[in-house]
Image (cartoon, chains in turn cyan, yellow):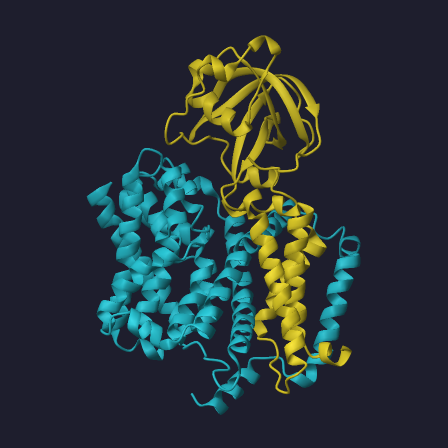
Length: 335
Length: 232
């Protein structure tokens, strides 16, 4: 893409300058109006219990995820602005197939929820890291970092094998998907490569500032979509039907995998939820913990925003299937 | 200044999101949605966002080119509006009614025995979290039998006059909220969502298709104010 094309692409997706003073005034008036009179004006509107529960879930998921997203865009902007591309060329093995496991293992260093890893891996691609390695990092970082493993150990006291199984499975899934990406060989056309903005004359600080601004605005909007979907499913899906499928191993693995996708619980907490699903086998609960950090409605929305819809529709199902198979295999072996 | 600011919708959106996060963290409203430990994360993220917007306004006043707002970014205003207009409450009886009152078997048997834990029982009912009672009353029957307890939670009504003293347990945020429910016997149900402190004796758990539900034979019911942190 040339610079001119980039500018066009940018202005077509943005609210252009002439209208923006109107947009600004309208937004300001609306927000200040809502802040001052919102609760009085709409006092009788949102009284239904279901709607209020939904609103609590929606705001809750957003409030929980936003600080991690801010951390993620902060790191990714710093990578874009201050770490030279040559650093990654030196740090990772030249051959993409070897770069994948190194990237997977380095997921250990990013403590946080899955929301932080999406902008960071986009920044890695931006810095010339091969997409396969960036994808491996995207999948491993939220699953095998020390915070998540520690919370898993706390949630399953006296069962260190669960922690081991979780780390091994997540690591394996991230590498398999990295290699799958290489095997298909035509991943480039599915991926909307994150744009390298302001790479020209601006100073480092300017690059940092504008990368962060752009990433936050973009990913934040998609995060909101994901939070709304998670809240809806949380309120609509009755948990009682879970009990009917707990007995069948294969079915229960699929159902708990789907539940992880729908509930979009952050990776630092999902171990506690898994621990409470005592009617299910450990293998099914392992599937829940492996799927959760790498595919869920909130992440699919974030990935659609960051890497484009063509990527998301292929990547999410592939990740889901590989995660279930790996959980079955390692659950059978270790648990 | 006004001319400069006029152009910056992005800055405006970010300032409001950042301000909303700081407002939640400083007012204590955040406890309705997330764990107490998230407070400093929310404050830090709010400060970072506001600083980002302010530097953006200052820097752009010196630049000629202007980028607007990605369309998706408008969506960020929805949660801000939800906070301002709906003012979502903490999860209550409605969320609890969507879940089963059965308490899951603890991963490792928790041991409430020992004289140190129970202390001097002549001082009246033992205060206990609803979460612990809901689990122990079912899985530690022998210890609980014959003792008196004091629980604080909100009222969740069910069919046929049955009602539960309820508390929601969080591990991360409201998305993983799990209801812990204790069936209250022997007293008429107070209004839905009313916070109460009850005292009473352990009772034989109620059998259901999906498991056993903790129960308490209630002696006194006292309405109380909602606690600062509604979750356990």
